[in-house]
Length: 478
Image 1: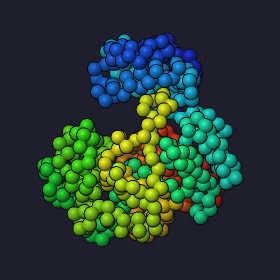
Image 2: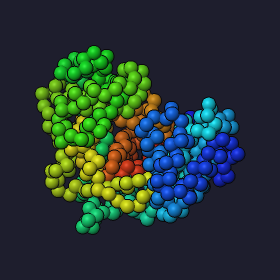
Image 3: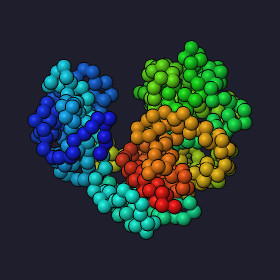
Image 4: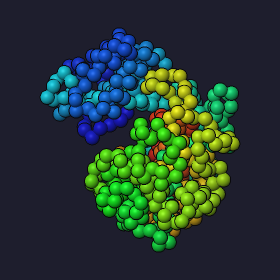
């Protein structure tokens, strides 16, 4: 269950008699009794004007899905904060099916009958990790825990994908489930390729590090110096390569309606420059963390200008080939890639129906993500990263210097980093319609966990994180 930066009470199942509790009860009552159309008509009046349009749209859509698809909502956990009576978290389960979700709500202090924070997020079934210890376990017990959790994901989420766990050169778990293509019921196997979404940012970051290592770039070079053709040079003079890597450039996201209306126009990093320059600046460079796909597309253009190669050729020659990642690459939506799984997603939060994802993706993979790979190849990437094949140890160490706080840990150059049992867990999650993927490395012990899936976005990547936690705990015994 997600936890905000406030002290929460112990879990319980009775809504408190507070403004937040009463508004939550009202929301659930309307889900249980109203049609989706009635939800869409009534709900906006409950939301404060301070909620941004995208968040407002998402909340109304998820509430409408709850009214249409859930069969009603059952509360199974409530968290509140005595010092913030307007704040509440409520975990709910659909009465029809096995979908779980989390309300995160806050009452507008200036208008007691309105919410100034309103989110309804997907969440994993807490029973998935029933019986999981917090400390170290044997490989045999870990294997049983993973097997039971994966079986439950198949049963409750219709999981499709592959999960591999290695501790140095020992394979603890390696299994694939589900369907690579649903129309013809083609099963997933260990040769199935999956799109990996934002996990491709790791390749972009390593490429930048390689070019710094050989003196073709500096971490502190400005965007203006390295991409003189960027339309907004005034902004580009303030943004560094280091800030682009760490999502502190202040740039927003290019994935706006104008992009998807003409997505076939965006094939190479240079094709994005005008679109990115037209998007509003989110913050001043270097001031705060804001996840930016645009920043990584610009890093791709920097790679091209510094190396004299196309982004895709550079990554193929200097990352995929040295790491022996023979089943990985980049493609457009209309290319035929042997053994590449079709991606699927649920059209609404509580919906059980699958949809093909091809209308939801960019036309071409890009430096911010969208390539494809396999578990075998991603394990090879992890090994090549750590053994010096891709970058020297000093360069790799620099990539994890001066990390930026983000989520439960920090954002390094292209990687996430967090501590568990005194060990660093480093890697990257990728998620978009039709993809859930995660690679996590227990840095000090050599253990690695990887999941690829042609379903998403989902919370199933959390299984990778839980496994990595147990491997980190095990590492403390040696």
